[in-house]
Image 1: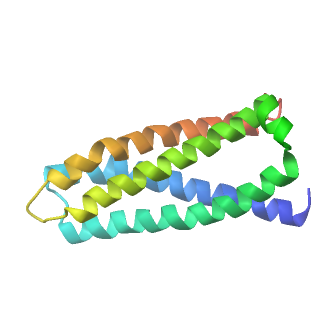
Image 2 (image 1 turned 90 degrees about the horizontal axis):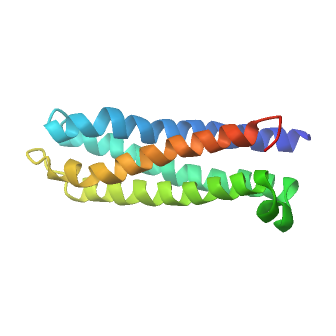
Length: 151
């Protein structure tokens, strides 16, 4: 493994931890109190806005680092014809879906934010919860891919 490969892998994993952790935090620790009206509109907008930016910056990092790793470790045949390749493609699909869910959820919440209304948080809840559930699936898939015994 070259230094560049190690840097790409480290940046990729670092952003994955930051992003999936942020999605889980917002879904599990921010949305429920927002639905109850326990979080002010400004604070909620700040947290969800930060998640949106983390999602977008992570997308750029994933394209660069994941693209490098896929280009150096896999061919079209190994991506589509091996278990490891299938895990990579599964992770790619999960990433796209989670990103879409976060964008929709944050858009619903931020577009309708009102300190007196709980509706935006209720409307965004299924999208945040879906993103959180798929984030767990993404983490599990990454763990399977990282298994040194192979898949």
